[in-house]
Image 1 (cartoon, rainbow, N blue to C red):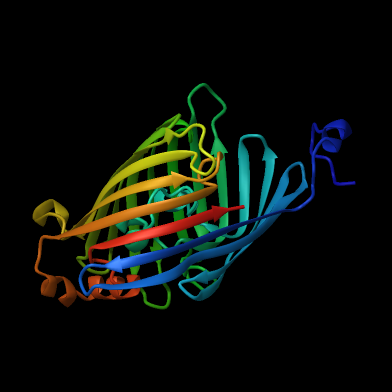
Image 2 (tube, helix red, strand yellow; image 1 turned 120 degrees about the vertical axis):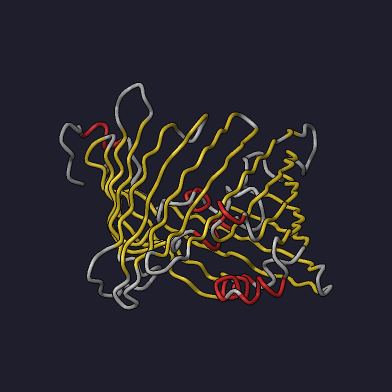
Length: 334
């Protein structure tokens, strides 16, 4: 029999199921690039996860990415200990809850491609460390997240002189209005460079519509580099009744931008994304067909953008990341 937590009785424990739960995600897409009139098929994600509860206050999760643009990646390996209802500890490798773009899973993202903030400015999506979440048990929905990480990224347990620190203050819940301010930063021992991320986000979700916005500043403390990114996006889901396959239609619109020293010179690159999502299952985002069109705007010339080594590295990694394109994606969650 599992060890009982303080105040827990045997009858309550018997009602709980401690069997592991298997889940997965498949995202496959077709893209057409208007710049050179090329196209491709891609398997963006193929994930398999197993998780569950060892007792009423200990949860665990293991997750593997089998094909992230052809790369095999071990994503999650963590345990969650919840000694009290409003207090949770995380141990292992898990998502850094900094950018709103990565607080949610790929299934909850309403667009095919992530924002500039999530893809280029956000800290590493995951790291190894410990985290504590505390929710204040009052009428005010206020919660705090603090964490200590290696700061070297996913699957990279390097020795560090000092850890990277996370702090996030959240007001609200996942339904209705929510806002947060956050910080993540530290010093990399190998490079000797200090990096800090600051940000805030606003979000409102009600029934069938969602609107959210975020701003993040990446401050390279070893130089004058200050990279900012922001976005605002929204969607509304229209139910479709008496149809065998189609369950809902969800138009979506997003504007996002990034640049250096934006308060003096403005954003270097911005993008408008127009999307329509077709729900093929009654459950939201269980089986969804997504159609997106992305159009880019450059404040500087294309040659100036590519001459900037920071943009050069990122856009090479994103593979035609700043060219106008059409994307069609099928997402299946099970």
